[in-house]
Structures are given as structure tokens and as C-alpha cells.
Length: 208
Image (cartoon, rainbow, N blue to C red; front, side, top):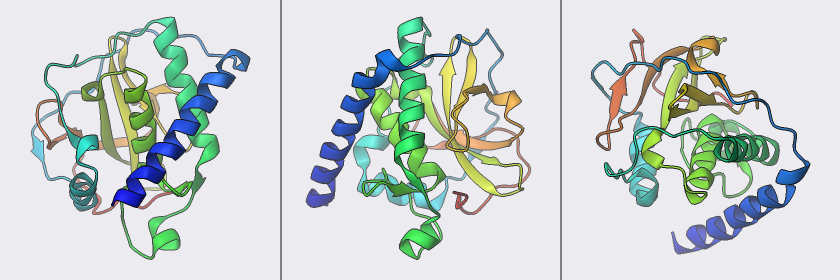
């Protein structure tokens, strides 16, 4: 555990430094217009691999209810979100957990530079939290994608609606424009999950 943690800090620090150095060369899209966010409906059963992730990476799953429940977007924060999203999508090699680790579903921070959908999003959240964004407003989310498969994205709950960070595209879209069926996401009020209205829930999030 100690070795993994040291490697993680070094690797993520280098990635964050790289993002900061390259920010001036990037062209950023316009900030999104205000939209209505998704509405959590009821408690939901968490993904088993998330439970294991929280046991190994407890700091990543802590919830501070004193943090803002929404991200107040301004040009500087928006540019940071766009930059981190692009850098992680470019730097992590997409591979399913079965191909990479021989297990159906494992969540981590892609310490070796390889990961599947949830690892991309967890790394993005880690870096954005380091940059000062409230983790409470960045919730891991399980969806059904265009192939009918389980997939994980990161929902940013903002004053302009729910925006989705995805490893399949670096375009940041409002949740209702992704084409996905939204199943459930981490709660903003407890270390738990809430339903978003999907009628079925994938057992894993193995889509790369």
C-alpha cells in the first residue's frame, strides 16, 4: 500500500505539473449555458468495486458536507476542468480490467498509466480536487452507454447544470446530451450511492 501511494503521488504530481505548463497553449471551448441538473431519486446499491476502492483509497471517498454542493463556474475554473479532462484522456491507456489485471472490475487511479473508464474519472477527480474544486460536487456516476454496456463517467454538479467528463470524448457535455442512460451516482450527502432513475444496474463498469 505504501509503495503504491508513493508512486501515485509522484505520477499524479507530474501529470498536474504538465497540465499547468501546457495550459497557455490550449484553446478552450466556451463555457456551457445554464442547464437543469439530474435529480437523485432514492438510495442505490453501490458498485462492489467502488466499495473495495474506498477501502484501499479512503481519502478519495471521504465526504465533507461543509464543501459546496455545486461548482461555481468561471473562466479560470472552466479552463482547469477542460485542461485536466484532456490531459488524463491523452495520458492514460484505455484497457479493461480483465485485459489489464485479469479481474472483471477494479477501481484505482491508473498508477501505471493504464485503466478503464472509472480509473480515468477517478484520476480526473483527484487532480481537480488538488486544484481546489470541491470533491462533493464531483460524483462518480454509472451509466448505460451507446452499446448497452455499463460505463463510468464523472458528473460535475455546477451552477450551470450537471456536466459529464468521459474518457470516450474530451468534449464536456450536459448530462442529457450524452446519449447515456443514467443509472446512479455517488451521494452528495453520505459515502453512499443514489439512483438516477435507470431501471437496471450493471454489476460492473468494465467498459474501457
